[in-house]
Amino acid sequence: MMDSQATNIHWHIGSVARADRERLCGHRGVTIWFTGLSASGKSTLAAATEKALHLRGLHTYILDGDNIRHGLNSNLGFSPADRAENIRRIGEVAKLFRDCGVINLTAFISPYRADRRCARGLADGDTFIEVFVDCPLSICEQRDPKGAYAKARAGIIKEFTGISAPYEPPENQEIRLHTDSISLEEGVEVILAYLETHQLIPKQKMETRHRHPGIFSDCEER
Amino acid sequence: MMDSQATNIHWHIGSVARADRERLCGHRGVTIWFTGLSASGKSTLAAATEKALHLRGLHTYILDGDNIRHGLNSNLGFSPADRAENIRRIGEVAKLFRDCGVINLTAFISPYRADRRCARGLADGDTFIEVFVDCPLSICEQRDPKGAYAKARAGIIKEFTGISAPYEPPENQEIRLHTDSISLEEGVEVILAYLETHQLIPKQKMETRHRHPGIFSDCEER
Image 1 (cartoon, each protein chain N blue to C red):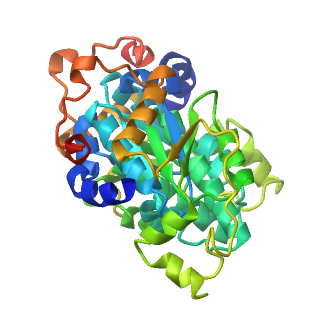
Image 2: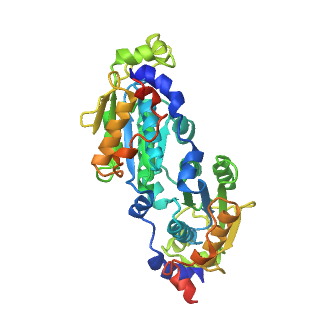
Image 3: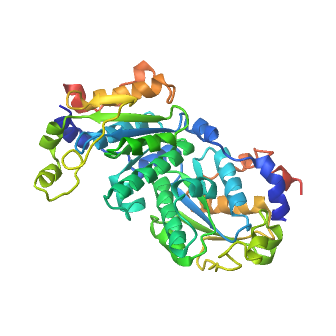
């Protein structure tokens, strides 16, 4: 019964391909890979970019410490090998979300060039966008929202990126945002413009571009 | 600049929640977890179910050996510990896809009750649907599409589920399909009816239910 049918039907039903899922979503499956120091603004940018994309009716998902470090990667520590495996798994999951047709945004320090190159290597074509969230260490350290830099300086936290562990800045990132001198809205606009220009998301008509007051009300008041 | 804005804006932009993503998708984020012996029909059912859901305009993704064993779990073998870690990671990724609002279908033997219970334990509410793809070992062995059962009998493949490694059938599965006696179309219909009844996907109007000739053309010819 099912056995022979399965064999016959396989040809008929085909399978749902990435292009089918992208067509349904109305945009490409894309990874926006934010990299930068702790407190440089990666998570804030990812959240604001996701919100802006979502309000345009696009399908999004953020991979960050909250949902990865406590879940998939809960059995990894901070040794060099574990850091590499951490980024490897995130790269693989990002690839699955791209294949699903979803715009996924990853917000991890991801300090090593080799690891980021590995994640990029999993991408097909132009759908891996590395965003260098570039903010001077001194500014990040002033912000220090969780007091982590202070603890790192005091030697309480070991191997802290920027203090006692290296950060290797990107050399060929798609987007570089100096988050000490631009606004959050400006950062998001740069990313959306990149996605539009590269035909990864549909262009938004001018008259609807600012149809969502509230999302950036702070910015608009400037 | 961005620092202070980020703090202020955080409250304004909020974040995109699972419910927002589900609203955009038009359905709940759901995991359909197929479990059963090798050659029982898991992948065929998952592919046909995905196709049927996709043709209804719903957002789907399959996690299976092809995209998991060669990617995320490429550093795992078949020892008991690695098998458990294999299913743990799949359960975590399935949770991410649910959170994204996507109907994800997993097609793995997943022979151990404890591992499946672990994957289910990650689910919120009623969005984890275990489908027992129940087919007698003798039938699976007759089908043996890749000759794996023959190799297992000959001792060439060690620890093969059903032959030299245990399969623990589900005790409280949501759906049980006897794939030796029902058609593929019938199996898919049972799953779709379950999703509709539990309000996980929108009900399809009767007149459009069979608007996609071709997908099950073999079945309809019976």
